[in-house]
Length: 110
Length: 126
Image 1: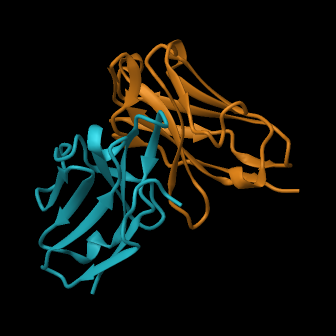
Image 2: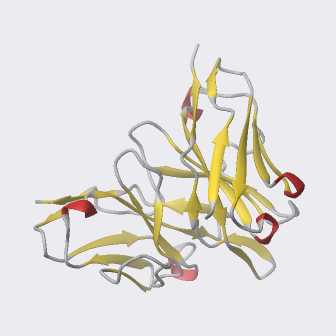
């Protein structure tokens, strides 16, 4: 059972937009920065979003992040078949003194 | 180019030990914290442990506390994870990751993982 809650799967058609939610509590998302990771099949995770809404160099602006209270959201616009992957949210939990992750969301581009 | 290359994985019996290594290059190693994150087969990500630039601050997941020890050698640009009393549930692909961090109210806090290695597989089985 993950500390952060994500939907197991989401799907959308190419060119469409999708959002992935990540729900937590005041000890984690509510008072810490959220990051998002993309894991393509058979590869290491890749940082997509850090500090709630910042994109590392090289990440297209089709990817966006937001946070409100104890929840965070990853948005992906202009979906491509190459976006099919598992997506994870992560943050620090101040009560546990650990990094916690969501269980991951599998994105299918139909 | 940032590169992180893990080694040291393998098959070990329950109760055994392993030492993982991560060789870093392409950046100033002692400017960053580092972490270990694992992924059991077919499962999600689980943070294992993290360390600040000089080893003065470390953190462990409850699941490994007292059994695993993280360390680093800045002269060798290397990160380590000593794993003792291994259990079947420790079976996973272990990634090292570069980790920006800060201190909030004096407590160590890891912010995110901006570069990841490909991982080294640890299998605990009799």
